[in-house]
Image (cartoon, rainbow, N blue to C red):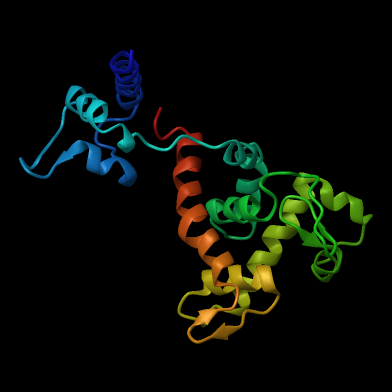
Length: 209
């Protein structure tokens, strides 16, 4: 029964692989396709056999949190273009801040998907009812603008994106012994969520179709 399960998994993955355009191998799948011993590309059948033997190599499926975040992809991409940001970075911030819950409220007055404070939004020109910050389109608009504002502050730094992410969380980044005081927050956005959402957004936009 277990063997049959992995055969089904392997066959399903073959169908997934065959849906990709010729010549395009995502970085996270490169190790599955490239046979470094024989220096050649594996066939789909060989990849399926490899996955039957090593099921831990099957690419990690999308999580429910990631699916919630991607449900706002239209708004995310529109504001990424508006403020010249990477859509994956905005998605990573949303994932970290609210897990894709548009109605999330923070302990010190944060609102919505990107956990924007009223005072922060007002600094950026918002002058309406604070509850409107729970509207996903409005929330992402001001959240992206604030992220861009932080980035502009630190354009002279070696890594302005990390500084911007730290500032987004802390208001003003602070360095202690070569690390941000909120380094755990920065790492969770930059090192995990950011590259992960780059892959997921590529998939959502049809690179694999």
